Amino acid sequence: MVPPKKIKVLITKVGLDGHDRGAKVVSSLLREAGMEVIYLGMYQSPEGIVKAAIDEDVDVLGISFLSGEHLVFTPKIVSEMQKNQLDDVLLIAGGTFPAEDIPTMEKMGIDKVFRAGTLTDTIIQFIQANVRG
Amino acid sequence: MARSKQSGELIERLFAGDRLAAARLITLVENETDKHHEIMRQIYPRTGQALIVGITGSGGVGKSSLTNHLIKKFRDQGKTVGVVVVDPSSPFSGGAFLGDRIRLQRHTQDDGVYIRSLASRGYLGGLSRATNDVIRIMEAMGREVIIVETLGAGQDEIDVIHIAQTCLLVMTPGMGDDIQAMKAGIMEIADIIVINKADLDGTDICIRHIEAILSIGSFKEGDWVPKVIPTISVASKSENLRGIDELMDAIAEHQNYLRVTEAFEKVKFERIEQELGLIFKDELQKLVFKGLKGTGKKKKYIENIMSGNGDPYSVVDEILRTYILQGSDEI
Image (cartoon, rainbow over all chains, first blue to last red; front, side, top):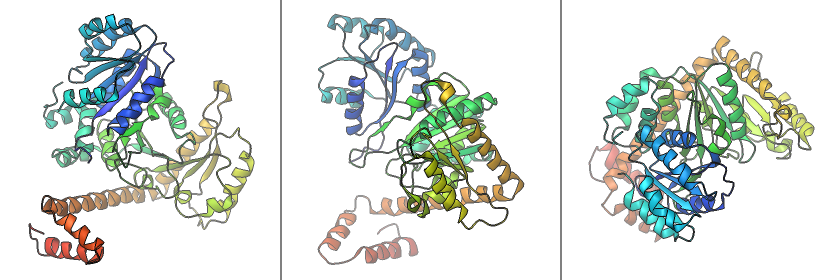
């Protein structure tokens, strides 16, 4: 049964980070869960990501990190979102980074952080439960 | 911005060129919310003036990378650009993977470019149901050029012809012989045939095949004969790109042809004709389904047909007789 309102998700990587396997896997799984996933690819800037999120009117913005720059880029993306009044867009992050950074990332404004190894159902359920109406 | 913003205010901001307002209006229209018709009613008088270029062709032939170059060229001319890219929805999950933006990255930070990805959502014809409405929203936003890229189309996904004024069919060498080119459908709709990846083996023979088929076409004096343009849209060095300027010239030439002949009026007429037919069919279907919903009758009809106690034609006749002809609210 197709839900009446489609959940739109933007999945992207940011900065000089050339590992996109995880982002592609998550994109495919969200697609299989019935969501419309816009894949932006690698080497994106915070400004470009937020602009694409505006144009596409996405409900969820998902950033994949592996480069170790998650604490550098997170505040930039959050402030760019605030500047553009995207306060009702769910911001999630995933990838490989130290577990002790998660509270910092969430304090910086990420709604939910998923580390590598998270079950896909956990991600899907979080999105479905928290996405804007 | 709160989601609850009134569509009236969004429309005012759309007319001022606001991309966030455009984005939210497109969602309201694409999801066929109760505001859909009212939004279209209000913006319609501000539409119809843009140059609309359609790009179609099979998956992987280079539609998006060509779109990327065309955006750049139109921007160099100082024109604002709207881009609609369509990718398929899954028939099973209803989800979609929309990946065309990857090739359009260099325009992400240009305010003069507005790109929107649409999932086909089960609509056949190479576009999505909302495509024409989305283009009109971009027109009302003031975009001067709109590029519509279909999903990877095969032989018969030709709806783009009803929307675009100038239609590009993108092919690559090695996709088949002159017999493929003789088939009805997608080959017929092109105003310009782009042979992309023209550095591949077989480019010359491919061009010859297509030109041979065009030469036996039944064109009358004064008809537009499709141009064949070889291009290379991806190259590690930009000086190895080929054919983009020639492609832009061909688009301009076709637009000029439409202007000097009466073809422009015909194109506009066909777009509205298609639009009317589509809306009518949609609304009629919704009307009937609304009547059937929750009654359990649809399931019963299907089960009856399965067990040999009826056929789909009689069922539809019965539905139409009850619902449309007698104007009953019940089916």
